[in-house]
Length: 227
Image 1 (cartoon, helix red, strand yellow):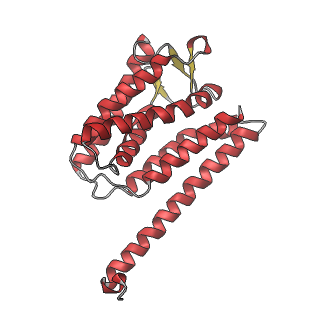
Image 2 (cartoon, one colour; image 1 turned 45 degrees about the vertical axis):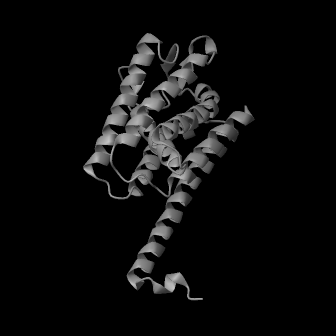
Image 3 (cartoon, one colour; image 1 turned 135 degrees about the horizontal axis):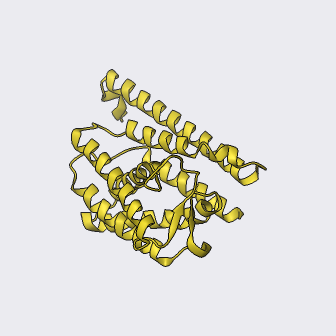
């Protein structure tokens, strides 16, 4: 039987091979950053040295995700901008009122703040919304159910994230108690953003997304288990 790859143009095979190499390179860089951060936070006597790189790690992750997005159209960039703005200002409302997630304040770990909210929070909402939305596209179900699944993926990640975030001064909860309202709020906001994600017309696939989501999940779950 003839190998199907032998029937493809040589230029196509070269392009596919180069794409695979870039993907492996990106995965290796992200793995290096996360493993280094995990070891530093879990076992170092001075975790503050590693915490200063949290914003850089977040920007690196988002940058690589965007690099593997096919055909970055104006619609795609509008999705990115809107998601970051919605995510940021939702947190502003949350911090000021306590109505969306409960009573909390942000610490210094996530970097520069505006309106008492780190600017990186908008970037974080983009990364999570985009990644969960891409993962849900693998399921052969209607878009609204995909939005629900993606929102649940985000809440599941937040469950693993919360103990680590509190310990390392990402944010602090009133009375040091993570309220149930936080997870309800995460689900509600995530669902709205996922509905928006499904309605914006751009290519919704990215080979780096499954690796990023799994890496984030293992990173925060592993640190949480060590506490």
